[in-house]
Length: 452
Ligand SMILES: Cc1cc2nc3c(=O)[nH]c(=O)nc-3n(C[C@H](O)[C@H](O)[C@H](O)COP(=O)(O)OP(=O)(O)OC[C@H]3O[C@@H](n4cnc5c(N)ncnc54)[C@H](O)[C@@H]3O)c2cc1C
Image (cartoon, rainbow, N blue to C red):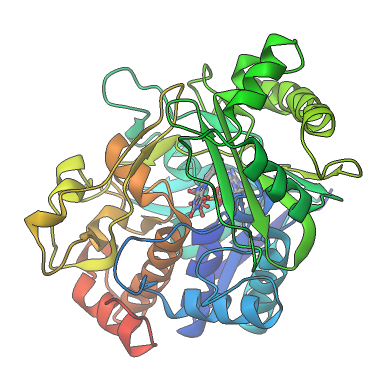
């Protein structure tokens, strides 16, 4: 086995939505960047947990707050893998190809199949992260680090204070194992929905552009409720299969449906390897059970087959960092604004469980600007000088994180993180705490990011 040492301006740990974008943004500033991931594909939850579509931000014109996000969306539309402005429905696998192409063209050193297992520090600075791969152990030295692992792994390995789950009992949001079926006759299925719809249910329009969704949430009226109940009564489904069930079409895949389930309501520790193993083992059993149910009870599934099962368990929320500022529920609720804002959102509270907890924020608090802002300080790890967090693991309370976590926001946060590091490097600042968020936003705007 070869032991290696790498030396870079910036090491980004985790090549998911936030990490990939952070690496691109820093490379665009001329930094020498390495991007590391335990898996063999960029995109993280978006590609390997099969999470699609991107949520809208519930702000007029859905601004992405990211020039890189706009570039990704344009490329996805060109490839027929997204529709409209590319800011909503997309194909998760093509997304990884687009991201990897952008990373290679920007000269980012990508290192896959490499897991971060340790971190070396000197006082308030990380000197290196330690990794393990088939080549053996390596040390990645850099001036700056961005923890984009989704689970704040680097912060955890440094024994820094961590936020985990909700504030009352530390329980994380439930995880899911998503899957995609191929061979589906989508027209026949939508016709079936219409004929079997619950009279009180809102019937989803036919997916003309492969941009449609059906959600079964047992707390709400759902078009196919009766069919699910019949299958549960006959022993063909478990009650869990019908507690939260959601399906999306995928642009460019005329015979495929992406399922946002099965969901595991009683596992409350999303960073426990035994739990994640359980989800892979039991989730696949559930997926098989659901496929047989569709074939028996629905129309359009005679030739359906399992095209993909997520290789990464879908984690909504796990560990979060303690940062200079931790975004609170009230910040989101009351559309709070910050001087060092680097992103805006009005995506609602979205907490899963046996009972879904979703609600919009108080728009009337700021009718002119009905959204909240994310300050740069919520990306700056409080107890370190050269470490940022980006993505779903930024400093945020449980309820706030349930809104912050969506993909457009993770992209914008990643971009802000990459640019913040490049400003620190250019100015030779001794600590990232000195980076001015206003300068970061100005640079994002300068590069073409649209905020409003
Ligand atoms: C089931 C589910 C449904 C969702 N639905 C939607 C939706 O419809 N729309 C929406 O916009 N958002 C949705 N989300 C939220 C969104 O997908 C995620 O919050 C977002 O993609 C997270 O991006 P990220 O970059 O922070 O983390 P991730 O994409 O999870 O990336 C983390 C990366 O770090 C890597 N990594 C982790 N640990 C290590 C380590 N120790 N060493 C090396 N690499 C490591 C991982 O392999 C991964 O690639 C959903 C999430 C889930 C789980």
